[in-house]
Length: 496
Ligand SMILES: Cc1cc2nc3c(=O)[nH]c(=O)nc-3n(C[C@H](O)[C@H](O)[C@H](O)COP(=O)(O)OP(=O)(O)OC[C@H]3O[C@@H](n4cnc5c(N)ncnc54)[C@H](O)[C@@H]3O)c2cc1C
Image: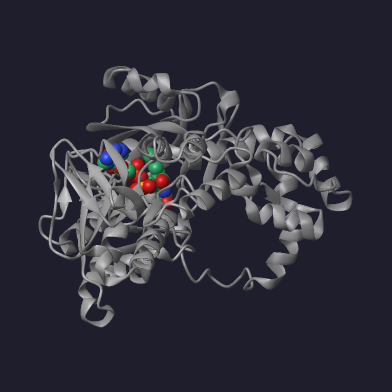
C-alpha cells in the first residue's frame, strides 16, 4: 500500500467520531473557513470505526418519544455544549430540565426515600431535613453534626471518594448516598474513583475549612438567596435528542471528510531523510484498510484503551499510562408506557439503587418528567441503567433476559406491572472512563509525553471529565494544539 501524496495543504486526521472527535473536526472546519485570514490551508479527514457518527450519543424517536441510548443531557453550568449548539445554529433546540419537579429518590430496604433538601452531593447543609430524613440512621446524623464541630484532618494525598466520605460522614453515607450517586453518574465504584479527579471542589473545601459542612455553608452564603428561583436549570438537552448536536456538526463538515466503518489500524511517525538518514519529524502515516495517508497532524479522539493500542510502538510508557485508565460498561433499557399505567409513580426525576440493595438496576429516570415535550402527553418513558463497574457480564445477556430483570425490579420497587408498549436496549461497552486514585498524576504523565509527539493531540473522556461538555472542550483544545503546532512550522512543512 503506497502513501498517497497530495497537494500542499496541512492534512490533519481525526480518529474517532464521538462528540470529542466531532468537536475537533468542527474546530478545524472553522479554521479552514478562516483560511484567508490565517493563511493556513487545511484539509482534514475523520475516521470512525462504526457505521455512524456520535459514539455513545445515540438518539432515536419511537412512538413520538425521544429515546437516548447514551447521554440524555449535559450539565448547564459547563458552557461548552450549549455554546457549540448556538454556534451550529441549533440554540433554539436547547431545552432546560424541568427543575420544578426535580426530586430524586434512593432505594432503602426496597422503599423510595427522597434525597433530603439542602444536600450538596454528600454534604448536608440544612438541619431540619437532615434530622428528619429516613435516609440515614441516627448514628450517621450524629456523625454529620460532629463533622461540623470536629472535622477530620485532610490526608494530604489522593484517596478514593469512598475513603474521603467515610472519614467525614461514615460508611452509611458511602453506601446510601455516594455510591449510588457515582454509579448513577459515572457507572463507577466510589471505592476506586479518585476524589482529586472526580470531586476536586471537595478537596479544596477540605483544605480551606477542614469541615465540608462548614465549607458548603460558607459557599451557600455567597450564592444568590435560596428564595430566588435558580436562574438556570441543572441539566440541558436538545428537543429532538442529543444526536441533533452530532447531525448539526456532520452537516457542516467538508463533503467527503468523514469515513465511516474505517477503523484506524496503525499510526507511524515519518521522518525526513537527509542523505538517506532520518533527520527530522515530517508527519504521521495513518493507516486504515483502504489507505495509508501521510498527515501533518493527528487527533486521537478515542477511548484511552484504543489510543493506547495505536501508540504502542510510538511511545511505550505513554501507551502503558493510557492503558491504565479503566473503563466501565453500561446498558440502558428504555421502556415506553401509556401514561395511565404510570399514574402511581412518585413525582420526580427518578431513583438510584445502592449496591447494598442487591438489584440488577443502578438507576431509573422518569424521562417524561425530567424534560418537557420529549414524550407525548399520553405516554410515559422510563430509562433504566444496568451494568457499571465490575458488571460487564451483563453485556452478554440477551435482550429478553435484560428486559425480564428490569421488569422484575420495576414491579418490586414501583409496583409497576403494566406491559410496556416498547422496549429499547443500548449497550455501551467499555465507554465510561473511570478516574481511579492517582488519575491526575497519570494524566500529567500523558500530557508531558504527548507534548513530545509533534502535531499529535488527544481528546475524549479519559482525561479531564467524562461529561459531554468536557469531551467537547478536549476536542476543541486538541484542534487548537495541532493548528498552533502547524502554524509554527515553515510553509514547506506541509508541502509533501
Ligand atoms: C449510557 C451513558 C450515559 C451517559 N450520560 C451522560 C449524560 O447524561 N451527560 C453527560 O454529560 N455525559 C454522559 N455520558 C458520558 C458522555 O456521553 C461520554 O463520555 C462522551 O459522549 C464520550 O465521547 P467521546 O467522543 O470521548 O467517546 P465515544 O463517544 O466513545 O467515541 C469514540 C469513538 O471512537 C471510535 N473508535 C474507537 N477506536 C477507533 C479506531 N481505531 N479508529 C476509528 N474510530 C475508533 C468509536 O467507534 C467511537 O465512535 C454518558 C455515557 C454513557 C455511555
